[in-house]
Image 1 (cartoon, one colour):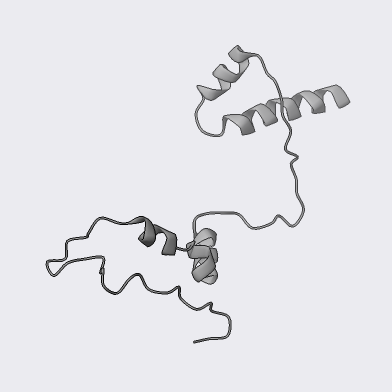
Image 2: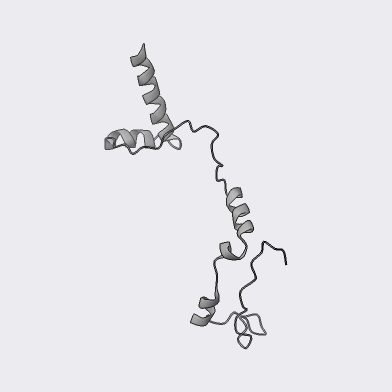
Length: 104
């Protein structure tokens, strides 16, 4: 066993296997559930690798946008939502154009 790995939890009661001879799974008991541990506690490196492959972004080198809460009129939001995915980015583009026009 490597130094970084935590020991596996105590196996469930040996007298009560999870499956019978035909491979049918028996009904779980409260004792079974109390023996369960979060996967993150047992194999954190696997969970971390899985989360990275799920499409999560890493930290940005230099954040370029700021998260804000913004209240907009319903008709404005509906208009942009109807344009499909990326509608929030399009609102940002419209606001950028407005700012640039006002700076000149």
